[in-house]
Length: 406
Image (cartoon, rainbow, N blue to C red; front, top):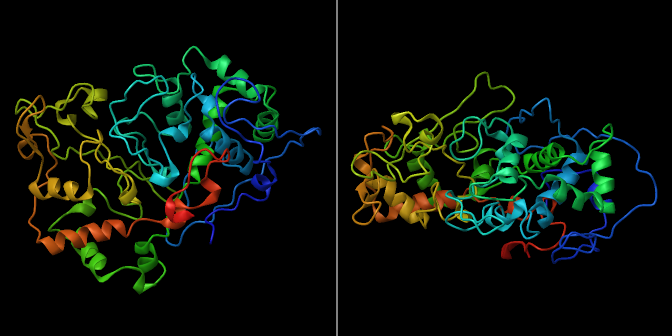
């Protein structure tokens, strides 16, 4: 299988066979490895060379966290290591499973201490191209800043780093594997074991999670016209039509607005209210989950969220910021109606009449065959090479690959 990225020989030189499962703080604990070296590692930094899918621009990387193969290697282990949570039970990958396109399949995520989060875990597909991160936080401008949110969040707790930084870092310091990886990733630092370096390494790894070889890509960028079915091609035409207007919020190479890459000349940031709720017929959304309003307290920002990428959307159910829509068919019905109707209960209201709803959400009528065509188009955005890429898989062997990857 063609690989999107080449991590030199560095990842291959690391011993993965000694990695185990379980819990605890010692070298024999969960997600630990007995791999070690008796020689002093040679300080080095290898600049990462992008090997991008056809038609994709080069990502724009922050100057304060350049990508190196050494940081990618470290970040991959940290991303999958349960010891990054205070309870030794959850890694970043606990909410971002490769077999679900780096989502978790839950309505809303569950933190390491059992706290339920209010929002659905977003896919990490092509996250390096985002100009902003999370569902509705315009203040998060870099991936390593975003990585600190789950690390230090308290209400609710996610990984539980707050007031526990040294305890968690000490777990990593005693591991021969991490002594080697941190030294190589940050060779000029006297003390490389810091929360900032953890975040930077994880950001380096997730920056490489680039997906661009779906059936759609093969048709559009690689001239493999037979890669999509006729039904999916008809769905594509509907998707990009003014009749449905889907592409206004899910356009471009990444099927998302708010993108950032080499060549962009201004900060592209967009948030939308898609008529999911209309509490009290006043345009309100449920408390503590009101989108951009939770940051700005501006009425017009009520219910406005960032439109996520649609790449690999077949695998990322349930949908919406709160996971409240279960299937792609139901998503299509929601937009066809021009907003969701909830007839009873605490969230009762007609989202189609939400006064803050985007003027792009107007509703449309599709035949049964046309609905299936649109669904088939959305499924054509699944990139199985990405889902099955071993460069992105769990080095500890705890997360299973998708059945199609076997």
